[in-house]
Length: 158
Image 1 (cartoon, rainbow, N blue to C red):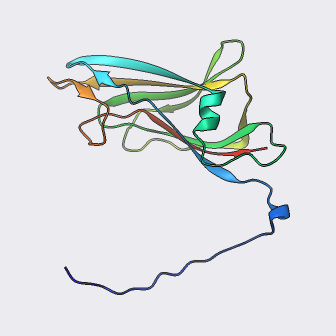
Image 2 (cartoon, helix red, strand yellow):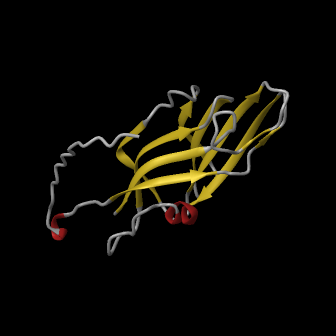
């Protein structure tokens, strides 16, 4: 109940608009429809079309931009997750595995250099497996006893 005064320092680096090469944004894709039966292993697959992906980015494409570049991907789930895969869905229907997390507490961060170019006829797939070792149904939620299935990333248009 005591007010503490402090200072915050911030370094700004600015450039002229015409010198901006890329404007990065955050990608966040998720599935809130998670219902895990008690004492069962469950795998859910969620397909995100390129349109869904474009609508879940917090930046607008710069004028003339035609493609989405993903330069970082990682996953988020809670304690019952045993495997979290991210795949590319190609226009011919083929799936290509590009990311796997086996530890919900320390999901790997996939750095993509060069970036993954996602065209309008492609998509991403999140495929997650949970082992519900409890005697209760577990659903989507914000608590650690609930579950999540979120793909995070960093992107830019080009």
